[in-house]
Image (cartoon, rainbow, N blue to C red; front, side, top):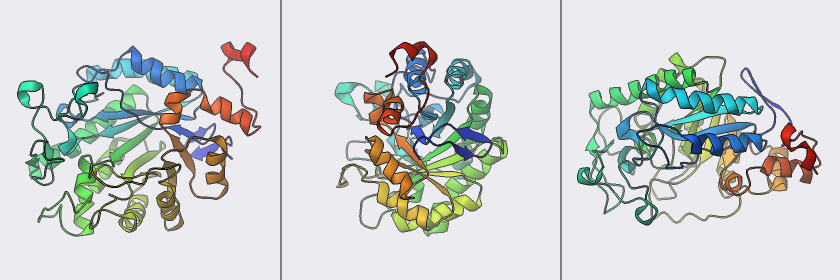
Amino acid sequence: MLFSTYELKSLTLKNRIVMSPMCQYTAKDGFANDWHLVHLGSRAVGGAAVILQEATAVSPEGRITPNDLGLWQDEHISKLQQITTFIEEQGAIPGIQLAHAGRKASTSAQKDQKGKFLKPAEGGWPIVAPSAIPQRADSGIPEVLDKKGIEKIITDFSTATQRAVKAGYKILEIHAAHGYLLHEFLSPLSNLRTDEYGGNFENRIRLLTEVVDAVRKVWPPELPLCVRISATDWANEGWDWSQSVRLANVLYERGIDVLDVSSGGLIHTAPIPVNYGYQLPFASQIKKESSIKIATVGLITDAVQAETILVNGNADLIVMGRELLRDPYFPLHASQKLQASIPWPLPYKDVEP
């Protein structure tokens, strides 16, 4: 099943392997460069069906670090077009994840200072969130978004989507996971608002649904639209899998095609029991209790492991991150292990096992 084709709206995926969005922190002023071309392109050469580009900021203030990719101006489009063209030439489908970092913005990408909050004098910028709760004790206190600020967020996602269409992306994922802005609105641990965007479940999901509606208006209806969520905060009284099931059904009714199920990221001290396939139970439960297609991610590192997930009906798509960093040609190697015959890239034919 891992190497069976899969129909998703108007697209035919050549297999079920999706490269997870993984920040590279090598952009300048939001612009992609040759690192992104080679990084993303090599995984397309390696046989993955879908290449999802890293979290791409919808505004300058929505970046996690100064070195994030962005799509807040038309000038960003040109290099991205080169990347999407190359991906498609390899028989893969180019996708993009659009994001706003919220209270996790304005941090350092430097290896020795990773995650350090940057003050304006250090090259940082003001951060925003649903409530004035810092991510960590040493983080900045975010400005509470008012109605005008919320409207700007929605508009930023919409205009970035229009640029994504021009850049040639065929799948779009809205990032509502890992403690970034849309997740911050979802969770009662980070959202203490008393207006229509806080309090009960319907209010806390409101910003995400409004972003989804705005994006759907400008995203081609024949192309798939996805949302990534954290199924749980791994913390008491936080966002959890039961709310994720409810959200999955709401998003399905609003036209979302795939729910990309991850977890965590909101509470940096959360005791997450990381092990092989540790997030799969959440994906499986949501799939059982909703009609939406499910992508699962999280320490999936082996061909048999991935095949078993699909055979057991626990997910529809396999999203892989670090394993594709370690081995850009994992799909080609996995096909041999599963005795599935898929063609190697023509220039590599002479070394095909």
